[in-house]
Image 1: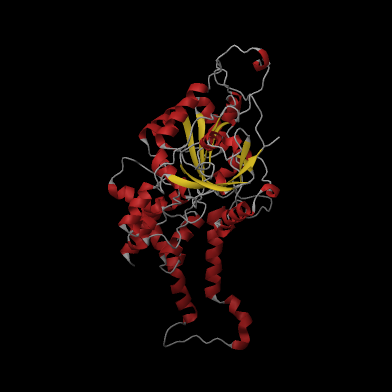
Image 2: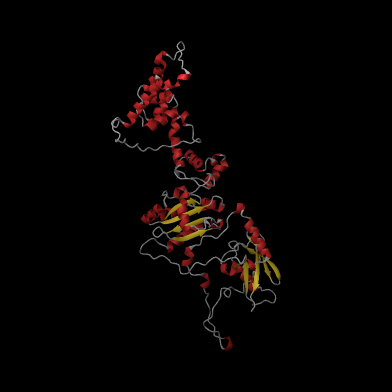
Length: 513
C-alpha cells in the first residue's frame, strides 16, 4: 500500500494509519472517496471485512482461479442472490449499520436512534489549487475557500469590483499580493500595471466595519456613540472609483472616520446593501445618484446628511464638510441637533412646450448618450440643506437714505432674488482654454449672442453680465434665463459645470409689462 497516500489521509482526517488502510481499501485506494466516506460515516471502524472480502469472494466455492473458473448459468439468475459474495456484502452492511446506530434498538421498533452530529464541510471548487499533490497546501486551500464565502460579491470580481478580503496593512509583500489577487479574482496578476491599478483603486477594507446586519451596525453605533457613514457604489461609474483612490485613502479622512464613524461600503447589487437601499436610497437605479455617501443617526435611523452624484468633492473639501457636520451635530442626549426649517422642494418638471427646437435636440442628444439605455433620474436630496436658512431669504445690508416727496417708498417692500443681483458688474471674457472655459449661446427675440465664461463661474455671473450690458433697447427690462426648461434663477450659486451649461444654449425671456 502506498505510504504517501496513507500519510495524506491521516494528515487531513487525523485518523490512525490502521483506520486509513481500512477506508482506503474500501474505496479502492481513491483518496477523495476515502476521505468523503470517513467524514460521512463518522470515522467508524471498518474492521477486517474490507480486506477479507476479496479473499472470501475468490475462495468461496473453490472458484475464481485460472484453473478453476466460475461458470454462471444465464437461465439461473435467480440463484445469484444466494452466492457468498453477495452475502458477505450484506453482512458488512449490517455490521456497519449496527456500529453506526447501535444494537440497542434492534428488537424494539419504538426506539429511535440518536440524531446525527452537526458537521461543517468546506467544498473545494474546480478552481482551487490541487492540494492532493502537496498536502501542505491543504490549509491554504481551505482558508482561500472560507475567504470567498465570507461575503458574496455582486458581479464578477475585478480591478474595479474587488471582493471582500481579509486584509492586513502590516502583512508582507507576498501576502498583500495574494490578498489582492483574491479580491480581484486574479485580475491583478495579469501584469504589473494591473497590480498597480488594483492597489490604487482598492476599497478601504481597513476602515470598514465587519458587522453585516443593518440592525447590528445601528446597535454598535449606539453603543460606541458613532455616526454611520455609508457609501453605495456602482462599479461601472468611474467617479465611484475616484472615492477609493482619493477620499478613502486620505490619512486625515481615515483618522476622522475611525474616531467618529462606523463606515460601510456597499456595491449597489450587494445583497447586504438591500436593507439600506430599501429604507434610504430610493433613487439607486439612477446613474446620476452615484457616488452616494450618507450619514445616518444610529439612535433614530434618520438619514441626516447626503452627498449624491457629481462632482466628487476634493479630499480636503470632504474633510472640512465632515468636521462641519461634527460641529453642528452630536450624539449626546444633552445636545439638540438642527432640525428642518422648511420643506423639501419638489423637482421642477421640464416644460417641453417652452423649449426651442435647438434645446429639444440638445436634450435628445444627452438622453441618447446613456450607454446601453442607462437610467437617468433625480439625485438623492440632502436633508442637511433643509436645516439651513434658504439663500433666497438672505438680504444684503441696506443703507438708509432720506427720501422725500414722490421718491418716498413704502416701508413694506418685497425684494426678489433678481433685484438683488448686481447691475454694475460688466463681464470680461477669460482667455480661451478648453480645460477651464466654455462658450455659452444666449438666444433672445432679437437674435443670439455667444459669450465665453469660466467653468467655475456661478450662474449669478450670467445675470450680472446681462443686467450690466442689456440688449439694445431693453435697458431695465427684467428677464429670465431658461435652460432645458429650468429657470436658472433657482440655481444662482451653482457653477456653470454643476448646472450642466458647458457649451450649452440658454433662452433669454424678456418680461415686459
